Length: 263
Image (cartoon, rainbow, N blue to C red; front, top):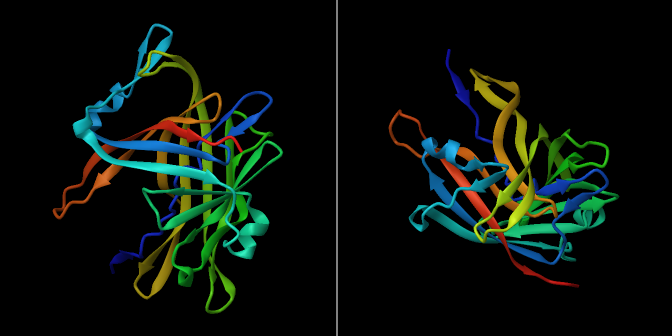
């Protein structure tokens, strides 16, 4: 008997993991902000060179322009009045990216807490997806580690009902506080965090479907400054390969503030 993996479930997370924390506040990228991201493709051997310590300071690798694979913008704004009533009722921020222009993410920021409500596609026939309860991205009650889970539910416009999907969990572990010397020579206080997203996965086994609990779908490192803005994030990616050999590389994304509107 053979085991066949079912269609992979993809969570189109853009940047919801970007936040910083102090003893008294939780900081999140505010509405009216546009960030610029640059992606690089690095060899696995570069993993030890991404952050290098020199005395009490760390420096972040500056890859050659020839290693750039993509440039994109990320926009944080108020929820569009065209959004579904459910999203208008539960979210107060939407996030979009030119890297994945078909997807819009929705968050609720309140009382020093940040919740990931869900996301929608630009194709209205596909409905929208939410997490119940929403995934907690930042909480005033947790400082070193934050963990939450919710059931993924997709609204079907044809039936007018939510279709229940698999459980999804997010774990955000603060590893350390760092002082980074950036490309302009400025010293920046940062936090280094490990981000893990798990999801129950369905596989086909003969005529039955089996559930693999808590399968890791995303694992990355995230570096943010003390104002809640991203500096960089990186993770190991599998390359498309027609052969039976698996090839991997490091995807590094560096961020900069390209515009901030004062509304």
